Length: 169
Length: 132
Image (cartoon, rainbow over all chains, first blue to last red; front, side, top):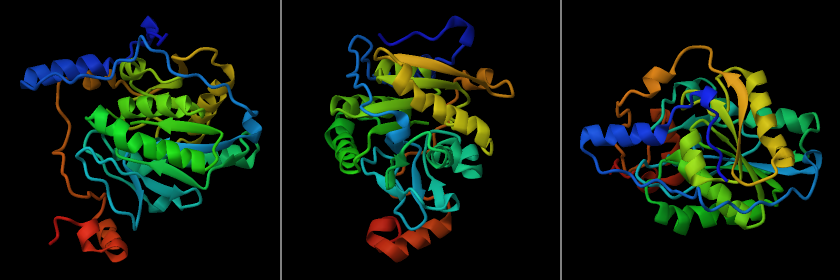
C-alpha cells in the first residue's frame, strides 16, 4: 500500500495544487500516473549496504560542462556523469523547479558528495562508475516507458549496480 | 512531473530485479506513482537531497534513503526523514502560480559558456539546434 502522509506533517499536496492551478488557468487536467492500487515489485537487497555498489539516478536536469544540454520538451535522453567529475563542472537546466539551490550546490539535487563520503567510510561498498541524469519533467508517460526507462534499466544493469538511489526534483 | 518519472523508473528497475530507494519532496505524487521505497524530505522543491551547502544534512538524508533498503518491509513505504526547512515556505508552495518557463525543444544550458563547450565537443548541429 502506498502510504498516506501523516496528518501532522502538513505535506504540500502538489497533485491538488497542480490541478487547481491548471484549472484556474483554463488548462486541461493532467492525468498523473496512479499506481496506488498496484504495489511495486519489491526486491530485498542481496548484499549488506557496506558491500553494495550504488548508482545515483537523478532527474533534475544535471549535465557536465561539455555535455549537450537537455531540451525542456519531453527530452527522453540521459547523460552519464563520471562519479569522479568535479562538482564545479556540473550544471542544471530545467523548466519547472527553482534552480537557485542546485546552482549554489549541485548536491541539493544530486547528492554525490554524500555518496562519496559513505563510500570513503565504508557505509556503502562502492559507487558505480557513472551517475545517470535526465530532465525529468516528462509529460508523456507512454514515451517515458518506451524510451528513457528501458535505456536506464539497461545502463544500471551494465554498471553492475546492486542498489539505485533515485532523486527527483 | 520529475517525481512521477522517478517513481516509474524505480518501479521498472525493481521489476528488473534491482533494489531501489528514492528521496521525495512531493508526497502525493510519489504516493500515486508508488515506487517501492522512499524517504520524504519536507523541503521546497529544488532541495530534494538537502539544503545547499549543508553536507551533514545531505549525508543524513542519503544515509536514511539507503538504509531504507534494509528496514522497509513492504512496497509503497514512504518514511519522513524528520528534517525541517528552517523557514516557513508552504504557503508560497500552495499558491496557484504557474512558475514553469516555456518548454523549449532545443538544448538548454545553465550558462552561455556551457553551450560553447558543448558546441566545441559535439558540433553546432547537435549542441545548438537554434544556432544555425
